[in-house]
Every structure is written in structure tokens, then in C-alpha cells.
Length: 573
View 1: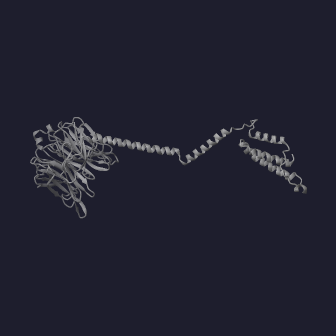
View 2: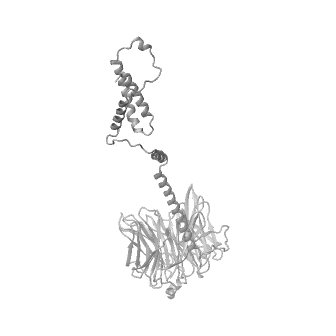
View 3: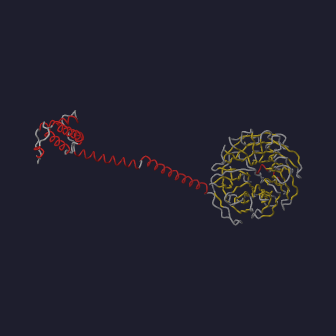
């Protein structure tokens, strides 16, 4: 073919393919090949064609040359189609509508990919579901709390009784309370004459079955507070004592409650340092005796003093108060009443005696607080009186802890004194095992029951320890030791009319700051009759008393919404 004709043919073929919109693949295929063909044609023209003459240079083509050979054009087209689709003899022209639909889908796909890259739908859905789940959980908790308060507060309206204090405590009826013990005295609401005349069993409850909650209340006396002490009046009203927290110190408080737990009056006592009530007891000549500690500032340091006071039961007015101590710490913990109305108060002192701390005992006239005698008991190591009871013949039984043993750790400590404070006998229990007595009661036949804690090995925490001894402490009739993997101890106990023993205390889980209060009944042989945990909240039980109606009253404090709250719980069959 003439090179000039081939160039023109190549140009026309390229223009035709580029002008066909329905043949995109053919355009993509043929365009570079046609360009390549043009390039080859140009090279051939330059190498093979003779040099043009002067006449041909000056001659211009004013219009395009006609196609010289149509058959060549057709063969080129067919060859290109065969190279693109070798299996098809005839190219199928695509449908314009289908191409438009495909283009639209491609555009949508690109938009979707762009949106996915910008907002990950999986992350968006996950975040939304998490937020919805949290909202549902919060709504569920709110519903549970509302129902919880409705079921617990209906029977306990907020009292509107007259209060002699400028600030009346706010009562917070809350679900089943709990408790914590520290060393609280075991105050008997039954006078000693009941033991002498044999009338004690007729008044004490039996509790053959686990008792039911009659009512329970929390009392908001300050930012934080705890109920350490309890006594029952002859009309079954209650006197409750403890501590309440002020911004920089603790104040002591005493409440009087009616049989339903409503506040009749409230009194708070304190100064610029810590004060607390540790024990309460009514006296036959009228009034209620309280013991605890008051603190003062000595040479820049806070020191506690032994504190005894008497209140008028009708109003809570202070009748008298006595403070004993020195330049070290001292505290009263336990008390009981002689048959003539005198009171015996026990605790510990760092200011008196010969050791690190000694047991300190006072006999006072309950009418005016006059000291009849006072004595210290102990060794060169620490000694503490935690419970005091008066026998039917006005002898004194004391229980607590001493470090006078050869093992230099705490041992349970029992002493018997006559009415003038002279020692009759003294016993320690525990030996190589650490032990302390926190509570004491005298059985009608004269046997002694003590409760506290014991550690059976250095690797174990405290376990509950309950033991029964004969009247002179020389024979142990039985003992019960039990506990969990954490700390367990008994803090208070009472007797029942069937010679049973009620014990209350606290249990702490291993490596946990939380505690749970519990109530236990044993028979006279130390066998467990039943045990119940004070459910609902975490806390401790400190004091336990019975009423003339056969009911059981407990006090303590628990952790509530980040604050400590004193509580009172009444149980009955």
C-alpha cells in the first residue's frame, strides 16, 4: 500500500473508533494500537520513501484524499474485533439503558464506600448499643431502688415528736440494717432481783426459730455516726448512744426512741475534741447512766479521759458527769448496776497503774456520781476490761484481754472480785492462741458465758470464740470456734428463757474493708440452733438487748451511700 494512503487510512480508522460511544473496550484496545500503527507508518515513510522533489514540496493538498482501499479498512476492523473477543464472531452492542444503570450503581457504590470510610457503621452501631444498654441498666436500678424504698418505708413514717435539742436527727428508714462491733458493754435490762427470785426466765424470750424483722431505722445525727450502746426502759422504750462526726471532731449523742423507733428526744455532748458513748444502763432510782470517753488537748496532742454521766430519762437533761484520767489515754467501756443502785464501771487507763494499759474499775454512787472506790488491774503489758456483770450476791465478774502471758499476745481474761473490789480469782484463756473476751453473761445457775475472738494460728485471722465456764472459771464446759477466711468476731450476747444464748457480731471477707453483721443462737450445750445474716447493707453490730414483750433489739452502724449511719433493729418471732 502506498505510504500516503496507509497514513490516511490509519487516521480515519482512529477517528471512527474514538467516535463510537458504545465500544469503550474497543476504543481502549484499538487506540494505542492505531497510534502505534501511525508511528510505524511514519517511520516507514521516512526510511523507504524517496526524498520529495521540489515540485512535491511546493504542492499543497487542499482537501483530504479519498479512501483508496475499503477492503483494507474492513480487514483492520475485523482483526481488531477478533483480538478483543476471539470467541465471538460478532460483537454485541451493549444496551445503553443497562450501561446507565451500571454507571448509577457504580456511583452509589463509590458514595457508600466514602461514607463507610468517613463513619464506620460498625463503630457507630456498637457505640449506640452500648449507650442504650447503659441507659436501660440505669433505669432498671432506679426502678429497683424505688420499689425497695416503697416496701421498706411504708411502716415507718418520719417522726414529728418534740426534740429538746436544737437539731433533731433525721431518720432514714432503710432496708435491713447491719452492724459493727468494737468493745461494747452488755447491759442487762433485767434487774438482778429477777435472777435472785427466779423470774428471769419468765421474761426472757425463747427465739426457738430465727426471728423476723419488726422494724429497722437509720438515724442521721451528723455527717457520720455510729450506735455503740443500748438499754431498754421498763416501758420498752429505747435509749441509744454513740458518736456523731463534726467537721473536725466527734461528738457523743444519746437518743430516746419509743417502741416503734420514733425519736422522743436527742442530746449531743462534746467540745473541740473527740467524745463518744460506749455503754448505757438504767438505774433503779431513775435515770440512765452512760459511759465512754471525752478528749482534751494536752501539750498539742489529743488525749482521752474516762467519762461517766447520768441523764434524766424524760428529757435527756444532764444530771451529773464525772471525768477521770491523766496525761495519757483512758476510756470507760462497760457498766452494770448493784442491787442497791450503785454502778460499777470498767475500762482501761494509760495514765494509772504500772503497765502500758491497765484495766480500770470504778464503783460510783448513782445518785450523785461520788466515787466509792477505784482500782486498776493488770500486768506490765496491756490489759483491758471490756465487759462487767454483777452476780446475784453482788460480786463482780470482769472480762476482757491481757498481754501478760508468756506468748506476749492477747489472751482472754476473766476476774472475779467481791463488792469492795478485792480479787477472788483470775483466769486467762487462749495460751499460745491469741484471744479476747468482748462480751459476758451470767447464767441463772451461775455459769459464765463469754464471747469474743480467737486466732488458732499466726496465719489465720480472728475467728468467733464462744465458751461456757463454771462459776469460778476453773472448768470450761464447752467452747465453739468458727469463722470464714477473713476476720470474724462476736461483740455482744444475751440469754434466752430456754437457757439459749444469743450472740451478735461481724464478719469481714479476706482483703475486704466491708463487714457483715450476723445473729446466732446456741443451746446450753453450745450447739447452733440457727444463724442469720443481717442482709441488705454492710456493717457491724455492737449491742443486743431483749424487751419484756419477748422482742430482740440490736444496734450498730453501717456504710450507707459513702457515710456511716447508726441504726436500730427490732426482731421478733
